[in-house]
Length: 379
Image (cartoon, rainbow, N blue to C red; front, side, top):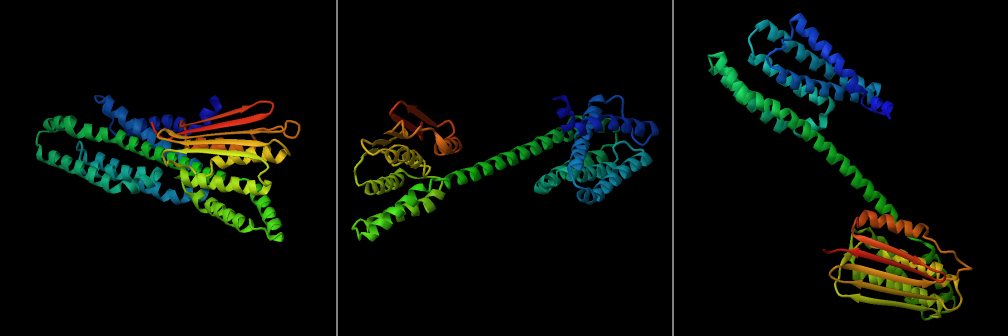
């Protein structure tokens, strides 16, 4: 665990001692003046140097050689701005001279652009307006105030708190951007997974219906046109309505009815199939949820039995949500009914579509299988 931590954050561990040594060396040589009477300011500036350089090194370690060459020129320009600012500041030897402050501001923009270019490009107008305003205020007080002690008071009271306070705000804004990006990627992944799950409806029924339709057409049965119409409606619903986020419960019920009627035609009404509906409110629901339960009931129940097969379905749509219950018997010797891919598919879709807003209860005894699905749409 410690090795994983060190590997993940090694850039931050490498940069800190090197940065301290460089700052101390520049101070000893005289290029950089580190005031001993302003420890908080020095600590804050050092902290952001450490964070910035660590992010930069971390990105460089992840880049390919080709990308490192591209960013090399930007690093050289940033370092040139920094050393020019330090040399000018040392040469002019005027505390807080405007030229040094301007060059340092340009350096920070170039520096942050190295590891967060998209962020800087997105907010460049806001950042330019904000820091240009601060720079103008600084110029005004620096040139208008003859007494340096009076300027220091103004700087400590107004300018420095704004400058120091803006740095963590920028970091927080950048962190928020990364959080939004991660959430967007998660949503896109969930949507892609949901779309894939919608396409995993069992084609077994369609093949059986087509075979049944073939038999009806050979016999010139009057039911053939009815089968074609219902199958066409089902395929249209699956293709077009199935792509939508929600559909009316009436459309879902109509789809289920077509499915049941086609099975009745196929089995010649020799089975006991009941579908009780109480649609007191035409709720909007995710499409193609209930069909998975109905398919399982036919596949593991009616299709495995010759006599006494039954399916009982109850669907209630009201002001609280949609509540669906389905019960079917099965032949224990013929089929050891399990959840299978269909129910796993359904559970995953429910988790993605109705997180913390659904219940799925499954009961099984020696002869009967019962599933109850509750979707809570309203508080």
